Length: 410
Image 1 (cartoon, rainbow, N blue to C red):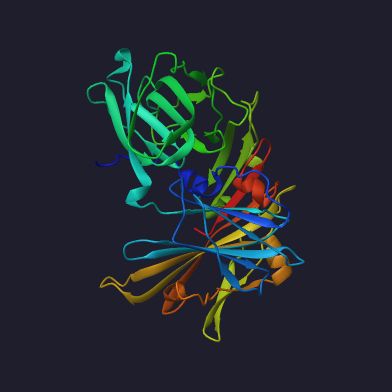
Image 2 (cartoon, rainbow, N blue to C red):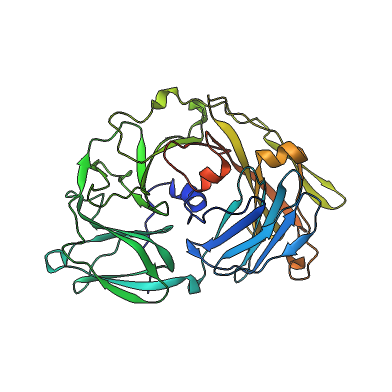
């Protein structure tokens, strides 16, 4: 069955990283790693943990996407490596941080066919011809009904399922809202929406130049505005459905260098604000360095030299630098690299504080990883620098009052 997916907001790229299932508290020196593919929390092909900066990589065994290991390094420094193998390529994530910043690590990868199941939603007769908008984990779909039902292919998993009858870009807008808490789908299934499930939307006056999403249950992101349409109806979470775990994420985006971009600044709040959540005209971060990093090869190993950055906004501190490295051995006839391994590198400020600004991409000597070590040619890019008034853990698991600044290189 063909999946119909429409991307409405660039902020969904952000939530692929930050919208995670809370894991609870870990022991003070225990790191808990959660791996998911498109929001489906599941084991991936390989996961390793490293205690300290010079320790050995130990292969970890996961249970339903959860991996654990102990850190004894006196500075609390640790690293995680995880691998998701695709048909002709592989994704590798290297995460480097300190225990004091976060003991919970969330890593998201591209999905495989086995990560999806088909959900059939039977609609009440009165709405049997209404288009439906569904949001679950990191996924969203906008199917049209057939025979009084919609059928979508969606990620397996457990979380809160958000259903709009109608859509954001139509003249009527959203006509009904349902939130099914602790919804779980691990195989094809069917559900029936009752009239009791459906609540009236609560329309609100929006804020100029500030957009927002719902973060339902701390897991599922639901759009609230049709950005690419003249219709500007906006909504808050219906009071009868609101949970203490639900948040609003208000954000302002600037994409031109002339205006200090590209960056996105956002704030989480647990209630609809009585006034504008923040004055976007005052958000003016210090620009990233003209040369945010350099590379060199030492003894055949790729080394990143990072130019540290401070956004120069009161109360906001740099949390993490995120890089993408692509490995390739040949180029296409159009001159583009034919990538066989993509590496996502997460380097926290606390890690840099203890280890320094030079980061050498790891070599893991385990036979299962050998084919994935850096070799051939590489293309390196700094994706973004993340800053916040909260901790790195609160970036992953946001709460009321958390502010996030993400600055991009293009």
